Image 1 (spheres, chains in turn yellow, cyan):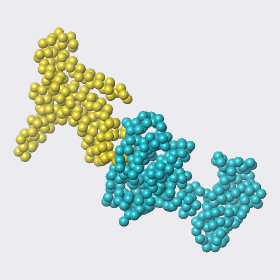
Image 2 (spheres, each protein chain N blue to C red; image 1 turned 30 degrees about the vertical axis):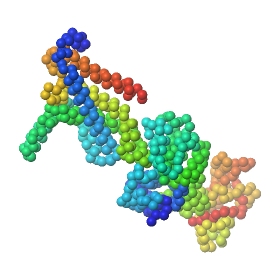
Image 3 (cartoon, rainbow over the protein chains, first blue to last red; image 1 turned 120 degrees about the horizontal axis):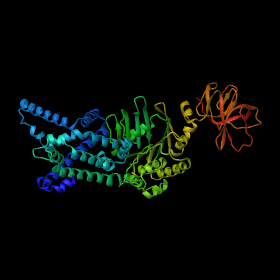
Image 4 (cartoon, rainbow over the protein chains, first blue to last red; image 1 turned 60 degrees about the vertical axis):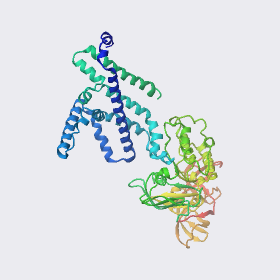
Length: 232
Length: 352
């Protein structure tokens, strides 16, 4: 791929590298953040309340990982088209299709459904390692629930949250079907760009976005092994 | 309304569906008193501590500290607002902080507290030197228990609750720690409730002891009274004090046993002449005397370091334990005859 990249430098101009990088980083950042935040909150809710409802939600939402990306994307479109039409017909709302289909929000939502189990279970398994009596002793030392989260839980989970975030980031960088189907018009990531060139048999042009894809993933993996896994 | 330092009234504690403590009353009059709760495993002692600390709600009754209700049917103050410290039996140190950081977690609580602990002083008293920079997984269970104790102490609680504080600590260190901790608690006037199943620990540490048996507080009194004046057969059995033999009250200072003869002493409670009672006979009550006419058969002999415990069988099949100093030159084998000095005199005649 490097050979192809160097051999056909004209594709450097064809591809808007800035926008590709920006798109990818933006998507990854927003999606990982939302995923981690929700996973943490639901996990914490499960931990302190033992409510059946939360438990049910978390069980149900884990199933997203089992659905292939294409099917998920199509189901997503079908559902929101129907839902939007339903709202328009019954309540006279403006069409909300545009908000969810072909938008960043829709993409993030679809990623959320797809990768929620990854984030949720990753945090859960680490959360279970700290005993309930740890929380209790923190309360007994005068720490409120919020301060317990800040002083005890977050410092403890910091590394695993980062690690899971990186895993999700790598998954999202190379995620093709969902991005391809649900992306906004003219919105490209490395994966979709590489795919579109490859599908036109322009293998030499596909090389550059592929290299970038590998580059970003490698950076994340390098970061993981250097700063997170090494000190344990 | 509440004049006492701690007042627990008619409270029900629920450990599990089957395991409850009912109608529990406990009053600590003075600040700085140490109370020990003794009871067999699984009776709900830990639940009582957890409820006082606010980690569990109580379905009935009330808990008031310094005149303020902490828990009742409709009131529940969160544990972080109670200023009650609980040191857990199992290790509950924060795994990602060092020992010194763990201890300091407690220090931030009450800056304007009435007493002030020096971290280094506590570390010295509890023998935690050299562990400051280690992490909880690098130290032993006994050490972790002491760290947890230090963390609780340094948080300057109004009420300190200790759940089996010395259970993982070895025998030689235990005695020293009990002394040190009792000294600290008394000096700083920290009101403490200790839960334990070791009666010697309870008797040494406590100003008052409570015996918890079959869902309720059977007896609450000073250690001396608990030991010498147990108020029920259950308490006697739990403290493993001795055995109960059938006897008959002769007059105001003596009872008669079919085989041991007349036993003199002072009755704890008054009985009418001729009443059939169960008399408590403890190992230290009988004395060995080879010349005595009263000879009993040896059933068993246990070596216990400073003394032997002989188990003797009387004619009416009672098995009576007797202490004999282990320096005693001659020993008696099983099935031999063993002389018991007569007449028998027992200081406190405990009868039921």
